[in-house]
Image 1: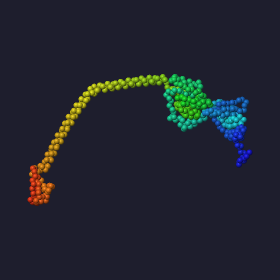
Image 2: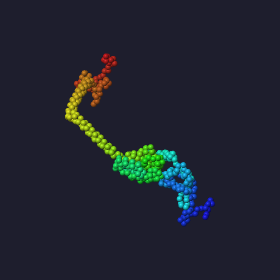
Image 3: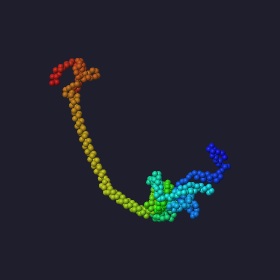
Image 4: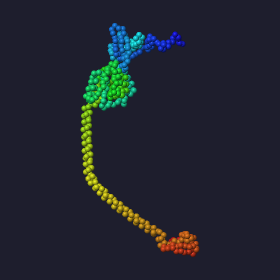
Amino acid sequence: MTQDGTGTAAAPANSAEQPYPVRSVAIKVAQWIERLGSIWVEGQVTQINLRPGTRTAFLVLRDASVDMSLSITCDPDLLRRLPVPLTEGSRVVVYGKLQFFTGRGTISLRVTEIRAVGIGELLARIERLKALLTAEGLFDPRLKRPLPFLPASVGLITGRASAAERDVLSVAQNRWPAVRFVIRNTAVQGPSAVPQMLEALRELDGEVDVIVIARGGGSTEDLLPFSDEALCRAVAAARTPVVSAIGHEPDNPLLDLVADLRAATPTDAAKRIVPDAAAELAGVREMRARSAAALRGWVQREAHALQQLRSRPVLADPLRELGHRHDEVERLRTAARRCIDHALRTEATRTTHLREKLTAVGPAATLARGYAVVQRVAGPERHVVREIDDAPAGSQLRIRVGDGAITAAALGTTRLTPQSTDEKRK
């Protein structure tokens, strides 16, 4: 055997040619478990084996949420000294050390202290779990799924031959005789309740239209499985709407908060999941009568409106309105023609007045009064003579008078003095 640098013996290599013997494996497991030390464990007692004259009592401690258990051994006097006798189904917290029995290859927990979990501690744990699930949003009303109006099949998880089962079936079938139930009978209290309900929930999820979990009333300890974390999370993750019908009105396990609908009692759940056939038929008859009355009323109103339309003069004599419109068109045409004639006469008179004004101030009228226009002829051009310098002696002139023109020649010019001009102006 060789040694490593620390001076400890190195373990022999393990292979198919050099396997460990069973005793070596058992001893190593025992040594490893020995190093775990003492621990506190919580669970539910499902079996107690205390025989007179024996030096060891045997118990089975089970996890209420899953199908797992652990063997426990203790001194019988430890059970006898408990203030409250330990019974199957009790929830306890034990303190002990794991032991591995190499001869049988089994593990058990040797406990030296057992504490019963009181109702106050259970309620406190439920409140802590409620706060946790609330923080995760499992109670959010927005996650609640609506129930179908008329489910084709209903899954029922409840105790075998229980009052809750009878109430749900009888009330639902009285309300809707065609309803079909798929029943899964499970334990509704004790250590096996949660695993069985989880299995039933898995079987029904997706196979039915709605699932009802029902149980009658009971003590807080009896209703503990319905506040289990594993069950609450399974209901929240289910694809099918789940109705919680646990206990009576004051009972309020966590399942009520996480379910899609909380019913006060199993009877109330039956009323919620299926409609009342008699009430629905009565509602149909009432709606049919109201529809018929509404239709008759509408027909009467339309007939009355049609009669009023037919009695109006425009429909009694449709051409009368056309005659009125014809007379109005003729009146408007006469008025328009009269207005146009008046406008034409006014414009003609104004044109005549303008023509007379233009004639009075025009060149022809001026010439008719004795005036003349003198033009100097220079070849083909003619220039109006405005001053004596425009027509020097010898210039050929054209003198236009009222009734014609005179050809003349300038013999000379005479300039008027300013004084004579002023006298002439006076």
